[in-house]
Image (cartoon, rainbow, N blue to C red; front, top):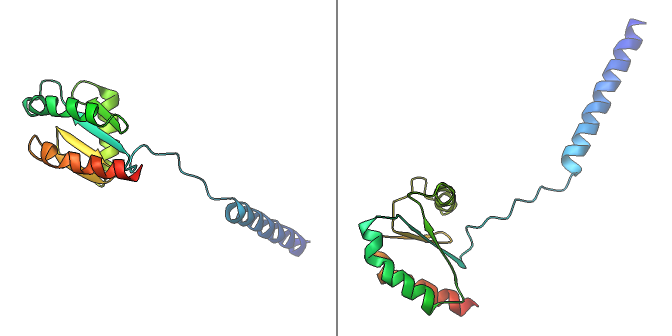
Length: 134
């Protein structure tokens, strides 16, 4: 009788393991939730209200949004807006930046441009490339 119980328990364990393996390995892979970053057609401009560097390029950024109306340029204030701070951290992480560099900052996919000098010098070239893709 002891052997029968051991056999039934062993059979139960094998069936349970096989069932679990079937569920795990036959299920379709989970699809990732759509991510807003790593999308090189969205331009994120992060700035801080009261930041003197951001203030210097504010007219440039306003002109850029007018000159490229068909490009999705998202201007997000991150010093006082907690939701935008979370987006800032997420977008930087997706771009491969573990510690965000500060503001002003532009992120396009995995491209990061920082500062009042580099943003005006480089951003328009990236925007022209985005327009050509459309």
